[in-house]
Image (cartoon, rainbow over all chains, first blue to last red; front, side):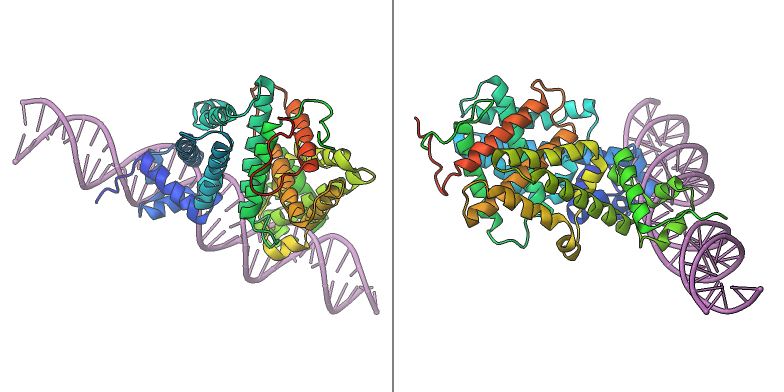
Length: 198
Length: 198
DNA sequence: GCCACTTGCCTAAAGATGTTAGGCAAGTGC
DNA sequence: GCACTTGCCTAACATCTTTAGGCAAGTGGC
């Protein structure tokens, strides 16, 4: 009987494609076996179990995202870098919704620490070097950017913004403008300043 | 044989509790049947299927959230209202993580239109009456607020901010400050203004 | 080229969940 | 007290997950 040439890597890649086609939570060992025209049990020599498979897909997605982000940030700074990084997340989520969902999988702490997730945090910090933020504020800003990017992309992908008038591209551009303005005039703690012009 | 007194409502409530205990994606018809000490098939007289059960839990969560939001917004305006609404989402997610996850379930358009989801959008718009935004910008702002609230809460809940130094409560407060400042000085489209003081 | 050995995919089997069809008994209305 | 409805049941089947053990396709030594 001809061998199918299964490897953990091929299974992971095929699993990622499957996720983009049918949704990450529909990724199943059985479906993957069907895709390779192979019996289900055969996969268990290459991945530990279903959870292991999903974790591998998540790690793949995180790595792809981090690679794209690194490339997008190269040679850019300021608002240019901000928009580039933001668009990496948004475009990736639209091109690969299943992988993007996979990237949100909750990983156990050790796996998370060894994942490309830490590269994302580092890159966001690097991006903020173009703005004038000192340490505690920098972390706040990292969290804000992460929240906006993830929140927007996830709501847009989930259809939360559908059937409403202004195009989501316009909103996205305005939000990036707003974030840039905000980062350049980061308010001090406590009572935020009123408009200095008023 | 004694009757268990199953109803769609009781099943939905119990399903919501189960979601908070074990996670929304672990909510299963079987687990719910065990909780009522009843055979699995018995549930199928009250809910159509597993998807129906999950949809009902999602609608329950959306309603509870909207009720809390309405109460929190009553009598408040400006930053007070902003913080109150934001904290409704964050507190609800921390008290009821499974329900919060349920509220993110993708609903089909008709179900979504009939859900409490529309109340959320309306309340966010009402909140923005405390700021000076005209129509296209108001929608952009609604989307921004939704993104930040959902993104922050979901990252915090998923452990994305764990094991890092500044307390997440501090970040949250600073983000609310920043949003308030931003809404009061909403930048015009195109090139955002530089700091007017510089 | 043959032998022993490893490795890859297989069959078999058992457990969990989802779902449907049909039955019997506990409640309800006259 | 009787017919009727309703609620939970048993039975059965499909799908998915996972483990144990088997056979044959490749691999290395001679």
